[in-house]
Image: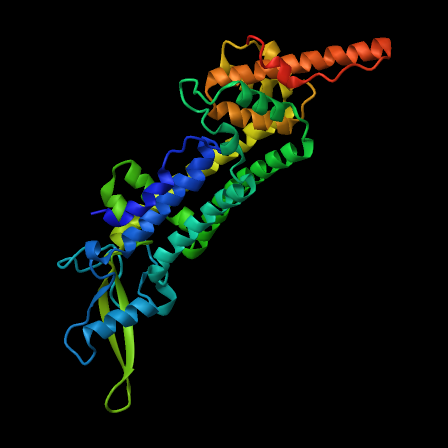
Length: 386
């Protein structure tokens, strides 16, 4: 049944090297996948039939014309949430179907736009990931190439070890700082994306987050009669449509129809899920921003984040490796240690610690004697036992 969704599987494909965290992937991968899947599902007419089917009885207006007119112009129900159809011998729909004054009408003009709205939302959630990929340009992938296996690979040889450590001890403060700032910008953009999408849905569905709250509450409490009553005000299954035309004598004629909106059976469940999902994303994203505030402000917390996954490495080794380094260098090391084999990560930090210690001794001798010292080659420390 879901063969049409097979191309979307690449969005959820697990990568060997990830330059983003779990919360980022919830935004730019899981949410995008869910929105595109919902959009494809609503456009698959073979599963749900015609999106609209109107009953008009006998008359001069063909059913196909009525369906197309009501699809384009929109249907309506009563805006009174407490009204129950008087005659329930046909079907109880919890919506007023008799004569409804213009002032009491609630139109469903969104109906034909739902597929495009979901696709637009998917594009908005993809934007931060697109920007980060363009800025990151495979940098982390090239540094981690062949070093992510649980077993220490053959590529981790003396020359590769020297090359990687030489790159890590080199001083590129502006480059590393820009790398971090771009990541934080995209993280902030993920949070703003949730707020913008909540506002967008609320605007399109006229107070959706307030009006749909009773329906979601009833669904979560398994109160299905209340669920049907409340969601029918936002996603009605049966609605009215008026078709005005000129009769043979030149007078204005009106043909009203009772329209079945079959896609709303799916829409109500999709948006009930999105109601919960977006609020969950909003809370998680806010907590993630607080986490990054702590990371940016606390040097000891940054050292702890590096040392904890690499136990039993000593905290003094990590602190010495980070001594004098800007936060941008810490972020690059953090990205590497999240993806590399832990043994390789420990060797990298230990070697950087030895290089830093040697450079400190050199600086101390120069300050004490006033004589120049030879340059300490960081590659020379790679060969030591770590």
